Amino acid sequence: MRIAILFLLASSMIPAALGQEGTQAADKPVQVRKLTLTAKDLPGGTLQPIAASLEGGTYALDDLQDKIQQKLRDQGYYLARTETPQLTNVRPEGPARSADVSVELQAGDQYHMGEISFRGTTAFPKDRMRSLFPIQAGSLYSSSAVAAGLEKLKGLYEGEGYADIGAVPAIAVDDARHIIDISVEIEEGYPYLFGPLTFEGAEPTAGTEKTLLTAWKALEGKRYNPEVLKKWLAANAPKTPQGAPAIHPHAEGIADPDAHLMDVRLRFE
Image 1 (cartoon, rainbow, N blue to C red):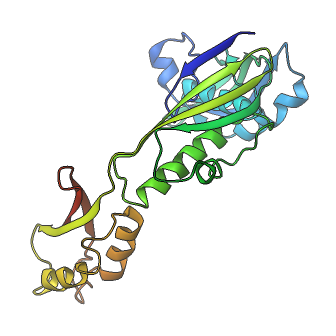
Image 2: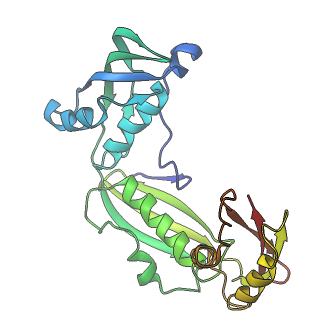
């Protein structure tokens, strides 16, 4: 049995197979009128829904390849590869172009989800962390489901003040059993508390900063949570005087890692 270990970023579960079309032509977007996908190792009926979902869209050629591969990986074809898209009946469409597009691909074997494990975690029970991933063991592997779980995992930690959270997944591909296991290395850091509120720029109306500082006392010293900050800002945003330009306050978190505080600077735009 051969087990291949691949380390990857959450946003890219497998490298894209890029074509060698000239740089200028490859970078110019194309609106896909008709997309034809062919594979020697898959029946056409499997590929037709994927092609239909991408028709009508405008893509750079490498982006189109990425999207095709992503849709295949979401159906368990983790090692799918695509050739360079071929364009026919090319027509100018303003700054872009439209064309009929054909792509040859190799789907490879279909894989199922194995175990998802976690290392370096102390803040949350592992079963709670596993529940954030919308995919069950034994289901067809889905890169999108894994990516969604990693985003939810990040949100779980951030909601408890862990602003420096890092979650690095490692993929183990079991070619013999067609199973993919994932191990997520957690770097928790320390939980942050809301620090002091400061201001940048001209005060929009007299007394605005004093009012905001009074309201800030309800948050200062509590666990930092970016969603809580958004709600606080929405609830306490200064009202625009009649006839004046709209006020758009923008909050920026400034980490103080030594004090484990997340100071917030408010800028009026």
